[in-house]
Structures are given as C-alpha cells and as structure tokens.
Picture (cartoon, rainbow, N blue to C red):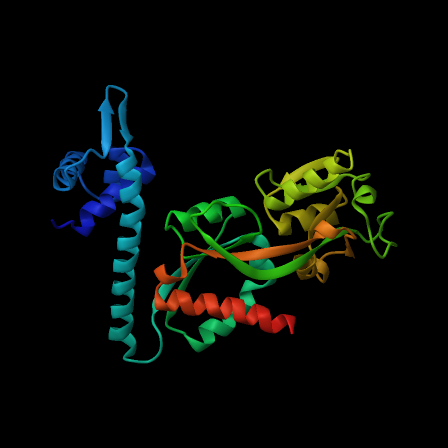
Length: 304
C-alpha cells in the first residue's frame, strides 16, 4: 500500500483547518478533488477517518493517530528537500537539516539568542525554525510532532514528552525609577501587590505563578492590565501605569532604553527551573539531537 505526500498534506490540512473547502484552498486543489482523495485514502487504509452527518464530518480516533504520523513523515520529506537543496548550492560543506523549535518568552529573551548564534556559527547550513509559544502549547506541539524541541517552564505535561533541565532564572520586579519601592534592595510579594500590577496574559505560566503565590498569602493582585510580551510590560511600567514581574535577565534588556529600576523578588518560588522537552531522543533527527546537546551543554557550561 502506497500513500502519496500530496494526499497526506491534504489530510493534515483538513485536520488543521477543520473544513475541506479551506484545506483544498490551502493546498491549491479543487474541493471535489480533495473529497475524492480523502475517500481514496480511507479505501487504501481500509478504515474510516471521518464520521459524516448532515452537520458535517468529525475526525475519528484513527484520524488523530494518522495526523501525528503524517506530520512526522512530511517533516522528514521537507528535511530531505532542504538538505538536497543545500547540497546543490553548497557542495559537501557542513551539517545540513532543519529543526523545529518552540520556546517560551523567558527562554527566547534570556538564553536562546547567544546559544543559537554559537550553534549556527558552527553549522551555518542548519535551518532552525523558532516559534514563541506558552509552555502548555509547547508541550502539546512536541507531543503532536509539530515541533522537535521545546523550551518551557517546569511542570507536569503528561507522558508523551521527555523533560530534561535546561536553565534556571530569577524573577524580579521592574518599576519607574521614581516609584516608592525603588529604594529597596529586595522585595517580597506582599510588598509588590500593594501596588498596581502590569501582568502577563492569562495563559502565561508567569501569570499563573504570581496569582497562585498571592492566593497562598490570602492576597489578590491589583492587576491594572495584562499584556502579551515583556516589551509591552516594560513600556507600560515606564509610563507609570504600575509595576511588573518578569525574569531578571529579560528585564535587563530594557534597562538601558527605559527609565526603570529592577529589584530581585525575594521569594523561594521566584527562582525557576526551565526545561527542554522532546518526544524521545531516539526519534530526533541527527541535527536535532546535536542542537539538544548544544543547548544543554552550553547551559551546563554557563553554570560552572
């Protein structure tokens, strides 16, 4: 039994778009031809991928299993095409391939730029495809084969991914230089949440951590507004709208450009463990394995 890549790509598009018409448009194929290809795919597999009714079609359990496998196969095919293109253009020099990385904002703003620069300077023909996501989405994407490597906060994400320590960071409080707390050298959470707070969006691990820690003290943060990134958080703080909590390493990026004061948060939970996750080390391509080792090795070297 042979499965052609065009049909597999169409199937993945249908699952992601949740509509044959949108999937057909995405893959530049007529809807009638798309429906015919899906029916042929079910015939070849001798199973039902979609249950059909007057209200439309719903994927079966087999469809979700095939989705994960199809993404892996198509990713490998894309990798072959990329590597062969590199050989055609660059001869035999150096390691080739692509790696899909998803990382949270804390990893991206504090650690990844220097690590990827050193890795890509050694392997200039490697294509790293980096996306920023929140930790729960990263874990799901790695488990579903939408990403090869994930960098996320420590937590419980199920048995489909393997976690290993990546980096540690420390949370700090940023405020205008004229703020009443600006003269302190260390701050406790109860001091901070007496003031208006600029927080991260509801899905962020940092928002959950601050909210949970405040609740443990029987307190409720005075959230003035929520933002989606550390740059927006620091800009709002610099405008005098409140104080903010973010990783110390991320805060220092903005210190030179904005009139801010940064003070460490003196709480045990404010020192966080970031993790690296994969589906399994054996399932990674050679270039992805090399990047995993580089990320973990350079992190270990920085601790020494």
